[in-house]
Image (cartoon, rainbow, N blue to C red; front, side):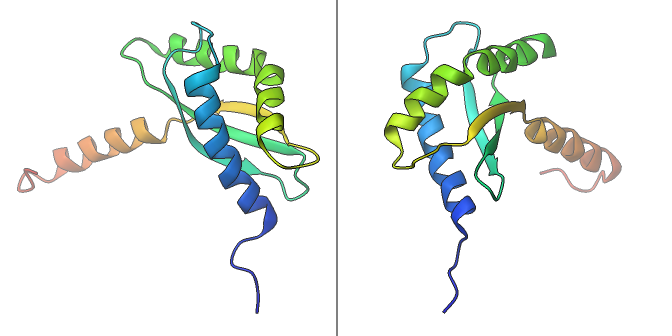
Length: 121
Protein backbone atom coordinates (compact mmCIF):
# COMPACT_ATOMS: atom_id res chain seq x y z
CA UNK A 1 0.00 0.00 0.00
CA UNK A 2 1.63 3.29 -1.08
CA UNK A 3 1.97 6.19 1.31
CA UNK A 4 -0.37 9.11 0.90
CA UNK A 5 2.28 11.79 1.34
CA UNK A 6 5.96 11.77 0.65
CA UNK A 7 8.37 12.78 3.38
CA UNK A 8 9.24 16.19 1.94
CA UNK A 9 5.52 17.04 1.84
CA UNK A 10 5.06 16.08 5.50
CA UNK A 11 8.13 18.13 6.43
CA UNK A 12 6.76 21.13 4.50
CA UNK A 13 3.44 20.91 6.32
CA UNK A 14 5.08 20.63 9.74
CA UNK A 15 7.52 23.43 8.91
CA UNK A 16 4.61 25.69 7.92
CA UNK A 17 2.93 25.09 11.30
CA UNK A 18 6.12 25.70 13.28
CA UNK A 19 7.06 28.81 11.31
CA UNK A 20 3.60 30.26 11.86
CA UNK A 21 3.99 29.92 15.61
CA UNK A 22 7.57 31.22 15.63
CA UNK A 23 6.73 34.29 13.56
CA UNK A 24 3.70 35.02 15.71
CA UNK A 25 5.19 34.45 19.18
CA UNK A 26 8.98 34.42 19.19
CA UNK A 27 10.13 36.94 16.58
CA UNK A 28 10.27 40.46 17.97
CA UNK A 29 11.50 42.39 14.93
CA UNK A 30 9.47 45.55 14.19
CA UNK A 31 10.69 45.51 10.57
CA UNK A 32 8.84 42.26 9.91
CA UNK A 33 5.35 43.53 10.72
CA UNK A 34 2.29 41.28 10.55
CA UNK A 35 3.06 38.33 8.30
CA UNK A 36 1.42 35.00 7.54
CA UNK A 37 2.98 31.80 6.24
CA UNK A 38 0.97 30.99 3.12
CA UNK A 39 2.95 28.04 1.78
CA UNK A 40 6.19 26.12 2.23
CA UNK A 41 7.89 24.18 -0.56
CA UNK A 42 10.67 21.82 0.49
CA UNK A 43 13.07 20.29 -2.02
CA UNK A 44 13.03 16.51 -2.26
CA UNK A 45 16.45 16.24 -0.62
CA UNK A 46 15.18 18.35 2.33
CA UNK A 47 18.02 20.86 1.92
CA UNK A 48 16.10 24.07 1.15
CA UNK A 49 12.65 25.33 2.08
CA UNK A 50 11.00 28.14 0.15
CA UNK A 51 8.69 29.93 2.55
CA UNK A 52 6.02 32.06 0.89
CA UNK A 53 4.96 34.92 3.14
CA UNK A 54 1.89 37.11 2.95
CA UNK A 55 2.41 40.58 4.38
CA UNK A 56 -0.69 42.29 5.69
CA UNK A 57 -0.26 46.03 5.41
CA UNK A 58 -2.12 48.99 4.02
CA UNK A 59 1.01 50.78 2.86
CA UNK A 60 3.09 50.53 -0.32
CA UNK A 61 4.95 47.52 -1.69
CA UNK A 62 8.19 48.83 -0.17
CA UNK A 63 7.04 47.74 3.28
CA UNK A 64 6.24 44.27 1.97
CA UNK A 65 9.72 43.89 0.49
CA UNK A 66 11.32 45.26 3.66
CA UNK A 67 9.47 42.60 5.66
CA UNK A 68 10.88 39.89 3.41
CA UNK A 69 14.38 41.37 3.68
CA UNK A 70 14.05 41.43 7.48
CA UNK A 71 12.91 37.79 7.52
CA UNK A 72 15.82 36.70 5.33
CA UNK A 73 18.15 38.62 7.64
CA UNK A 74 16.70 36.78 10.66
CA UNK A 75 16.56 33.39 8.92
CA UNK A 76 19.43 31.91 10.96
CA UNK A 77 17.69 32.88 14.21
CA UNK A 78 14.36 31.48 12.99
CA UNK A 79 16.11 28.32 11.77
CA UNK A 80 17.61 27.81 15.23
CA UNK A 81 14.24 28.08 16.97
CA UNK A 82 12.53 25.79 14.46
CA UNK A 83 15.38 23.26 14.73
CA UNK A 84 14.76 22.92 18.46
CA UNK A 85 11.04 22.37 17.94
CA UNK A 86 11.15 19.80 15.14
CA UNK A 87 12.34 16.24 15.58
CA UNK A 88 14.67 16.14 12.63
CA UNK A 89 18.38 15.67 12.32
CA UNK A 90 18.65 18.44 9.76
CA UNK A 91 16.04 21.16 9.23
CA UNK A 92 16.02 22.69 5.73
CA UNK A 93 17.60 26.08 5.06
CA UNK A 94 14.91 28.77 5.09
CA UNK A 95 14.46 31.21 2.22
CA UNK A 96 11.61 33.70 2.41
CA UNK A 97 9.68 34.99 -0.60
CA UNK A 98 6.76 37.39 -0.96
CA UNK A 99 3.50 35.65 -1.87
CA UNK A 100 1.33 37.91 -3.98
CA UNK A 101 -1.32 35.35 -4.88
CA UNK A 102 -4.01 36.98 -2.71
CA UNK A 103 -3.52 40.38 -4.34
CA UNK A 104 -3.52 38.79 -7.80
CA UNK A 105 -6.74 36.95 -6.97
CA UNK A 106 -8.40 40.18 -5.87
CA UNK A 107 -7.31 41.90 -9.08
CA UNK A 108 -8.59 39.03 -11.23
CA UNK A 109 -11.89 39.01 -9.36
CA UNK A 110 -12.28 42.75 -9.98
CA UNK A 111 -11.52 42.27 -13.68
CA UNK A 112 -14.08 39.48 -13.95
CA UNK A 113 -16.70 41.57 -12.21
CA UNK A 114 -15.95 44.47 -14.56
CA UNK A 115 -16.49 42.31 -17.65
CA UNK A 116 -19.77 40.77 -16.43
CA UNK A 117 -22.25 43.49 -15.41
CA UNK A 118 -24.99 40.90 -14.60
CA UNK A 119 -22.92 39.39 -11.79
CA UNK A 120 -23.28 41.67 -8.77
CA UNK A 121 -22.11 39.37 -5.97
